Image (cartoon, rainbow, N blue to C red; front, side, top):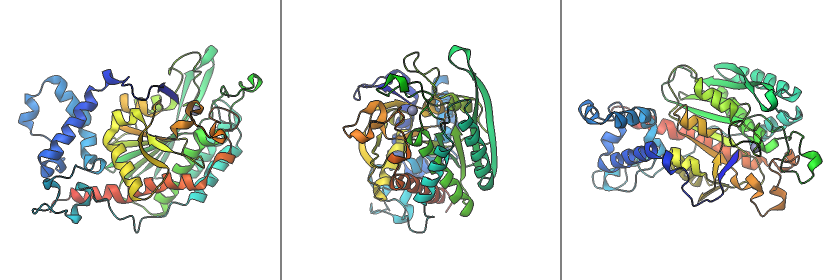
Amino acid sequence: MKITSPDLDSDSNSSEKPNLLSLRVIIFARCAASETAFYHVSTPISLQKFLEFTVTQRSIILRILPILLLTPILIGCPNTPQNGGEDGKTDTTKSATTNVLPDPAGMPEFNAQSAYDYVAKQVSFGTREPNSPGAKKAIAYFLEELGKLADTVYPQKFTHTGYSGAVLNLTNIVARFNPEAKVRILLCAHWDSRPRADMEQDESKQKQAIPAANDGASGAGVLLEIARILKETPQGVGVDIVLFDGEDYGDSDIDDTAQYFLGAKYFSSNLPPGTKPAFGILLDMVGDKEAEFAMEGNSLDFAYPVVVKLWKAASHLQLPAFKHERGGVISDDHIPLNKVAGIPTIDIIDIDLVGHNTLNPRRKYWHTLGDTMDNIGASTLGQVGKLLVYTIYKLIPDEMNQQQPA
Ligand SMILES: [Zn+2]
């Protein structure tokens, strides 16, 4: 991933915001105006009203329809009398429509040690940059493991012309649970290793690929454990787990982002059939022992309600790695998912690692040969995994219950 803007306060993407601003305006307006109308997503807006809009407005509405399906779980409406019962008191039977989050009791346990082992297994294959022997082993491993767990698994193979005309053979791994389900989410991470350790001080090491324990394997490890849980405790929600290749191929000295996010770009233009996920969660560098997950800037711009809801849930679950502060702005696999696929997607990422923007000397290993298992902590993987389990087994079902006719 790349830092899009080192100036955390700048609004460099403001020219790209209209759709999202419209999205937020519509959500907040509906939130405040009428809880009932807000949650009856089958008719989010009347046909007559729809036809009164301009072509641009109509296209915006059509683009946000998928997210409207799940907006109630994505955002806690502000505390207004409409959110409570008739007397204005909180109605606990409608937890998703209020700020009351569902009780985590009874949800499956995320096994942090198992996730850690999935990370270590990937690292044991050696570096996993495009066309490497380690990449081949990793692809075979993902297909075998996920083949045992998911309802449908397939490799999404494609080629890309890299630097100096190199032909890169790349493979995304797509694992689908409940492929026919109409309510679905996307969980994703990149699995590839960066082919050059360009943040090494020692120039002689800069051309080597990195072990990528955190910058790659950590997210994929969490998602393999999620897949194991989904197999063990089937659930009605559709979940697409996608592991992207080619996220970290780009050389920031040569170009901007043209050679980054290769797998996510390909996937975004070649989505699986059926219902599009209502939203997506990207994991990147989610394994450091002392990780801090601030709210990433592009995620806030593209999928604000998802960020707010998940960070609120993290507080509810008492997950200390999640910080209630705005972090830097990062270009990552979520950019094509938002812009090309139209799936509102957030990035859970340990932003301070990027550019070695941390005061902790141990944590200055991003894009170096030091990105090894030594930095990985099962407890961080466990926090991220627990939040995903809560989202799948509590937040979404809670919301779906809201939408059942009385
Ligand atoms: Zn990276």
